[in-house]
Length: 243
Ligand SMILES: *[C@@H]1O[C@H](CO)[C@@H](O)[C@H](O)[C@H]1NC(C)=O
Ligand SMILES: *[C@@H]1O[C@H](CO)[C@@H](O)[C@H](O)[C@H]1NC(C)=O
Ligand SMILES: *[C@@H]1O[C@H](CO)[C@@H](O)[C@H](O)[C@H]1NC(C)=O
Ligand SMILES: *[C@@H]1O[C@H](CO)[C@@H](O)[C@H](O)[C@H]1NC(C)=O
Ligand SMILES: *[C@@H]1O[C@H](CO)[C@@H](O)[C@H](O)[C@H]1NC(C)=O
Image (cartoon, rainbow, N blue to C red):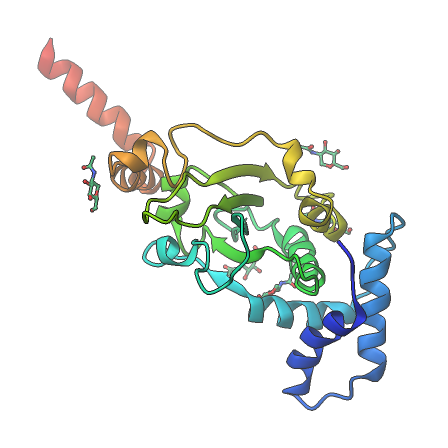
């Protein structure tokens, strides 16, 4: 991935211009930062970048919900590029779904989105928050913090769509850095992960094909809401009835 300064300038400029913040120094810092990410030496990320990164992230990433994910995760027909459209879906959570320890990974994600979005070969970005969307997370059988890397082919001339390739890449919630996440796309390290082809595949897994992912998600979500003594009572009740 090559960083051209003009493209690099465009995005942060857009975001910051809105707020009438003087650009000069800030943008220079961004360029240096981005360049240091693509070279192998990776310094600790200074905090002034965080605010800007979160703003860029917010602007370029799509928030997935149970209702919208099928219409969001597509190969955009208005871009003329050949080949599949790549989506990086960041799966995150909060106190309940990530035990409150997704903060570092989310910070790294925000920074890598800001950096990657400056590249002409950037994938598209989406975020799935399991705290808000427990059913969607259950129906894909995914948990945070993870990057779900999806390559979604463009529809063929006859309107049929070849199967998307998805790769499930868990992040180390303690030690993951922005440069790890940037490398997934920039250095194509996502290819080190085998595509996932099991029954929970969001697009063409067995459960999705039989329209079962959602009902099963409801069941497992319900189980997680159910007090732990309830199944035991139910089982003892049932076994007594049958004996
Ligand atoms: C990451 O960016 C989002 C906006 O997309 C923001 O709500 C969140 O607070 C940021 N998180 C961190 C840890 O920077
Ligand atoms: C998550 O837990 C922390 C510490 O227990 C608490 O301070 C924070 O308010 C909680 N956040 C939410 C959204 O409940
Ligand atoms: C987040 O990073 C800080 C400093 O790098 C570390 O001290 C902390 O333990 C990390 N938090 C989690 C939840 O791993
Ligand atoms: C995550 O990183 C920490 C610190 O580098 C390491 O001790 C731990 O084993 C890693 N966890 C996993 C699941 O790889
Ligand atoms: C699943 O649902 C879709 C649309 O609701 C329908 O077209 C398809 O036939 C269903 N598949 C099965 C196996 O029931």
